[in-house]
Length: 308
Image 1 (cartoon, rainbow, N blue to C red):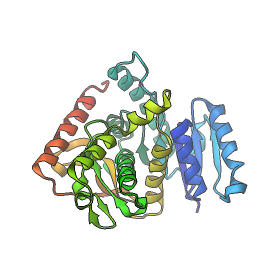
Image 2 (cartoon, rainbow, N blue to C red):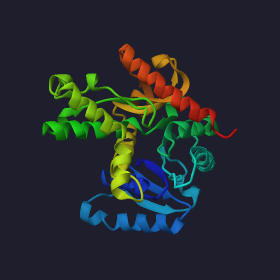
Image 3 (cartoon, rainbow, N blue to C red):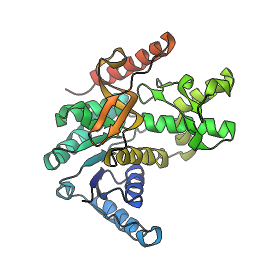
Image 4 (cartoon, rainbow, N blue to C red):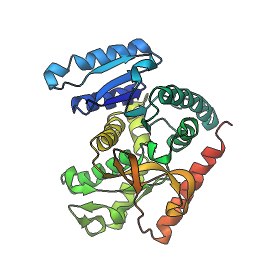
């Protein structure tokens, strides 16, 4: 049986994710967008690359949610980016409306699906998806830490001039400037990062990681990052459908782990065919725990501001 994955939002992040899923022959992909012809055109363009790239997965696109029925995983990238003059509350209200409707459409056709949320503000949108879907926490997961950790891993590899394949890193907390990079747990082929770089250099990498999205936006001028977010979403899909039991940092609905309850926060977890199959509890220093608590408070304020 070939798996089916739905990607809602045929913008740059969604389209990149869809292309990578199909190119790796992980699943057939349905792209849905309010701009139906955009989704149709991008899907056709991708399929015309299949003979060159040699993949057999099918990508279709349009505006009809009926085509998504029976999806094992649904990736939600739809939403507005914050524009000049738009307050945080404005963005929160609009994207709550969008994500709510998207999730309703998806779960009515794929009641057993696993939701991966990418729309910002991410941690709050995960809570919206959880409330609307009624799903258990195993089946609502946010894509944040995979991206943040990937950025950190690249910055480390670049600084040390080593293969990215040798670098592991974790970033905890909310997906924003309160995220918590954990250099103490970062390794290069098993060597702890603090043995390879001095504290000042590590602090600079931490700061660059926290501002990784803004750095890209400053270069693009209009628009935001999409290659790395698309790839990070793909990695989560592949880990789930291939039942890899892969440990990745994701936004998870915590129920006591790390001292927090009923809140989506980025933590390392195991991803497999059941979705989020377990939270990995790291031992944090008092300083690291304080930083995580601060990040959780920022997420809590967003959740409290959600439209009722």
